[in-house]
Length: 71
Length: 396
Image (cartoon, rainbow over all chains, first blue to last red; front, side, top):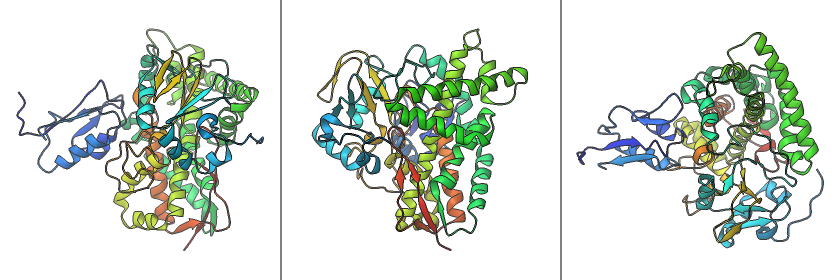
């Protein structure tokens, strides 16, 4: 069970099409791979102060590929 | 342009080449969305469909079982199928054709073009110089993507007029006149065949050389695949971004409060660019119905052409609050300007880079400008929408 008090982001690779919106809105949390598809940086843990950017990444993804837990 | 039979009822006789649509399509789309929501037309071979709701556009973009990408432009007369992989590819051929190109257009690679793009924009602004009036489309927007894509393909930047003529023939004249489209295709093939010969003799660090050297399942790409992809890169990379830059400039010229705010708060540029992409999305795609289905209460018959309007989807108030208003600080904006699903525009990172730098450099050089009174902004017809004449008065 993930600790629900920690906010985490992840990318559903089956949905991501490489729009790159999450990487632009929250570069601290996401990066693009060599094909331009997104992945969460590190373990996807959202540091304090970046919660709003995580929510914006979710809200701006046209493919509903951004996942947010512990929010 | 020839004169067209006027539209009596947009719901059953839509025409995206009608002058009313060309100059201001948004009220037409809003009206259709509230009462259809899928418009139809018999003006195009085998009939055409125009879904106006975001959800229907999304569903079609995701559904390659009923909707094929083999025809990506709605035409009065269908052309013979001419693959331009990956845009015209369906599964399972689509994925390998796309994967081949993705690395070349990933953010990391595209970022390398920033300096060059900035230099192009600055030299165009230098040429406008001290003039009190200029044309934002003719003197500025149209040249930027031509020069960038020529650089990527390793072909002469000075061939821009040729490229723009082909685009005009394929996307506009060719919709009504198949011979014009075919002539442009033959000319493009001849042009690229000559470039291919040059690369075979002496490969370079460009996309043509990259395609010729590609390993595609243990084999080189077929000649038809290389030519199809090169035609695609040329056509898809030019008037689209030219339109995006032009529409952004037009908005700022016509809306002084937004222009002044963006100059005062340059940090808003990223949300402003995404909002211009949403509100003035340049690109409409197409699909061909391959299997009968029903969507939005409308039966889709095999052979029918679907006008897949991401621009109309982006104006759907069910998806976007205040859809008809342009809000340069819109924080939540999951627009579909670059499409949805597996065919997401391959060049989206490049288009965004060009638009951002073009507007940033313009505002630094000419922070105060308006549309010129007494002169008319004209918009392109059909599948790609953007200003083609954009008279601007620069105030100093």
